Length: 571
Image 1: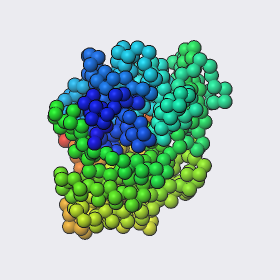
Image 2: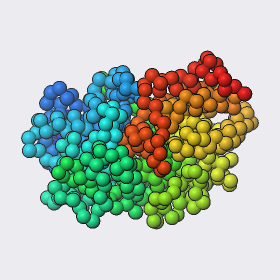
Image 3: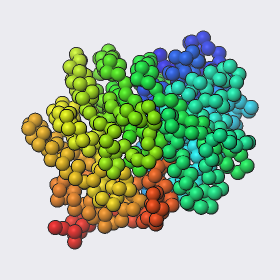
Image 4: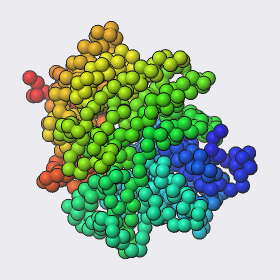
């Protein structure tokens, strides 16, 4: 049974009022891959009456009002992707399609959805219960942040949205603490992972440079971001306080990560793994095709690519589900009439980080002074693919499972760093878990740009490609690698893209079909570089391409089939 999204469904349950109503800019897909659905199911298990309104019509009051007013609070999410990223390309062109909207037409997701939905609630429910922001849009915009689409620093989203609270990161635990506090009639200000606005500073918390200071001085903005970034670990982080005009943003320390047992419990909740009929009548939702029969094995990523926000939202520590939990979920798939025996993906943010972590990090928190993988793998992190190797074999052996693809990204440098099981793992992937191609993300090959991205050097890519090609030949399969490449990353000039083109042609033996232009998204170091034009460590001037036509030119250099784009660089 879905969580109610209409009055009729509430009546079927005998409910006259909900405790909590969750609003999202996605269609309501009841899946463990959808943050709003996870939050709803977690709250439901805790005994709360929860309803969901997906993509409410913002032109009238009827849609936002269709479930009435909640007893405890409203939860507002901008969706599974920041609404501005969802609506616009890297060159600020409107996207006509939307994988999370019925029918695939991008006509139901407003820009800055968190702000729009909060205002919609305020307009139609005077003196209503608290409004809480959540999801990746709120999480990454919780302090002063650079907004690419308006090309300016914006205030913490709580101030713009006029919401009461914000829960950041993976809020499976904190959402229950928050709801319990409101149910008991107490202020939820103690909840970990909570942000709120105060008239007074919190003296025991670290003080961030004020919003006014960051507007006046880019170096102050860099100071602010450094402190913010290094206080995201639930073991080592301190609370933060930032002055915004004459009030203060208070950010409590992060909520503790779920344990393996707790992750297993969440995964076992009664998800329908389908689009709610309320939305399905308007057409298919493409995102469901990918996530319906996929299994998330873990959360977090310690790769810390400078352009990626996973480390801020999900964290830099890997938390893995148990093997039994994953096998049980795979077995459950076979009970669905439309399951064809194919698991679309068995992975996580980075597939081959499942099942191991640095023993120091899990007890003391992340290191502030160094990264796990850059410029080289930390000696304290000992990669082993043994657990994932065992898991893949057991999933494949289950009755009713024909194929279990590993479609999530793989860090190829971790495979070479695992001297005991890396080769065996890649052989297993090549022989049993690919659909003919393997997606990897070198992003670039120039050492200068790779250093700014926090990515490994091209030597590991060349080594991996040779091994992949050999294993594919030995298996008798025609399989190939596809490469994620980025153009116009901070520091990247046309000469770097010419080098990438030549490398792709002469070493990888390909003409890249696609490359993406770098999109500055809130709360990443690459976006910090883009806005300030400064190196994040040395703080020396850094070239940043901001001309849209020249960004397109960088992309075209690497994807064009015409040799004129890299003539003069031939060997």
